[in-house]
Image (cartoon, rainbow, N blue to C red; front, side, top):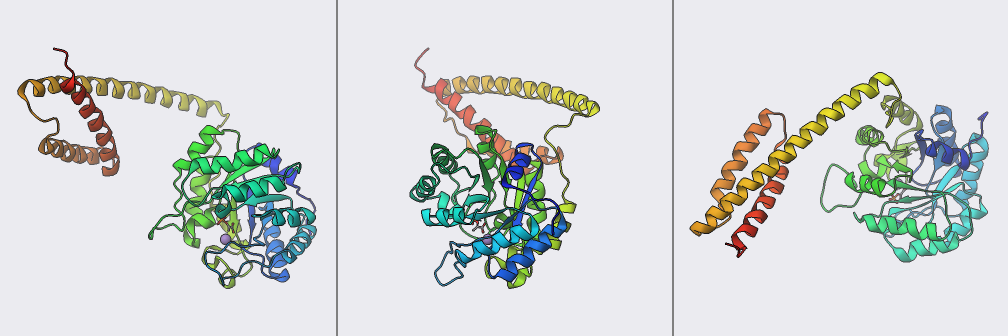
Length: 365
Ligand code: PEP
Ligand code: MN
């Protein structure tokens, strides 16, 4: 039905060119009909680069639907033939890798519950030794950046060259608005350490519900992610897993149309000039802020000396409460949130106490 066939290589090229890649499909492959119907309707949107589906599902409790197994791979091959779209699936064991390669899966992904376990990641990496296939590594369920990077390194050591990461949020105890808290600073730090690593966002598993998918996707695009993996199902409410977070292919299309696609850099001269000016202003302001903070600390040291001479404690709670109250009020007038002011003052206070402590406990006269 598609005039053009997309391959894993072209998906990779798109990622490398920083054109957002869209991967979509059901949480789980359930029946042949469901896989084909979803795939055909996704292809019709003209916005999807690659299909996804879970074949083996790691479920929290036994007795839930655990995936159709190898049979589902044949359905995905059929979907690829009909739509021209490549497919990606989750692997967690050497046997999964073997079956996936037999059925010519285009890209493999390691799920969040596998990334947490170095034994499992190593098993998958060993099974991939000498195979040239791209692999996506989802973040581990717990917020541990080193564990995420460790999984990437295990694959690199096995000779896998094309690796991308998928940010799907982190488990947290208790109810929050997210199914998995995004903790955006963790993927941002990963990007800082591995700037060439393509990064996708999986808003479906972060959100856990349909109504916040757009907001999460927009945030990821604003943060310069390279693509999105979003669950879509021909009849979401009847899905055998993750029903609440799945949307129809047509809803996906609407949602993608609502996203404002931004790029990290723009070549327009006018834009670049304006940006350079603003950055210059920010540099000046940062400079001033630092100079003022330096001065503030010098005064704190003087107070330290004074307290030492008069034998007074460093921490005087009343004084500190007074500063906090005043600053929060002032900050609010300036449009600064209470949370920000408290964080900032906390850091300033700690530095100030350390300085005073040093002065008071030094034995130089
Ligand atoms: C999935 O993508 O269907 C899945 C199980 O994801 P995760 O490993 O992020 O939970
Ligand atoms: Mn799912």
